[in-house]
Image (cartoon, rainbow, N blue to C red; front, side):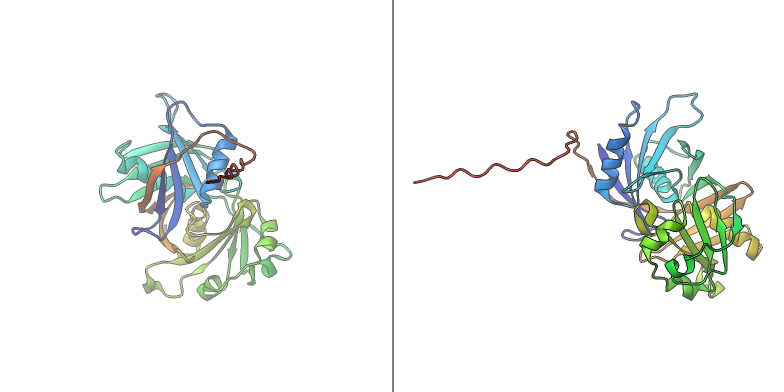
Length: 289
């Protein structure tokens, strides 16, 4: 199996969000257990597996994403990474349609290398802050929204950018507060910094304490901040230790996410079959002269 590791939502290596990408043959996906083993071995926030579909299936490639511990319904950065690999290897060009658990997603690669993703817009539902959320997160929420079935996060608005950047959550406690994770966000401290809002994403419930740059979260951040700022075209900064910019464009029930990606590893995954227990090495023979 050919495997690439791609840094997504960045134009330089060792920044943004790394994703594993494996392009498979037309025979389809291996067993779910094997996909999970590979994702666990890579230990990246997401590993994407894709295989081509025959004509007439409504999409060009089937796409699935796995964290180190589970499969997820939607992932933005690993979709961007997959589109980047398809484009840079001349496997596909222009617009590519992906069939995924959350529906058909579309990527479009421009001549300059930037990639646009067409994702469903999250349906935000305001709700009261759950008991214990502030203590687990380490900050008092200004507002809390549920992000709907495919994302499964809580979107938590904080007082300001400083509060978002300064978070140091209790991850074990935070895991109990959503199906997937918690997105903390606030308006940019200054409009001249090149971004309109800031966020951080914590997903301990699916094996990721903090995700560097979460594309799918921006399908919720885009409508949230567009309503407050009065603009459909926005730039979000995910302020992790490996920060990245996500350009968002709200189109009603669809959200366009735009970013770049860089391949940093291109190699071969040697798969020889699963084993439940490692085999101990043989004891060296006692030799005498």
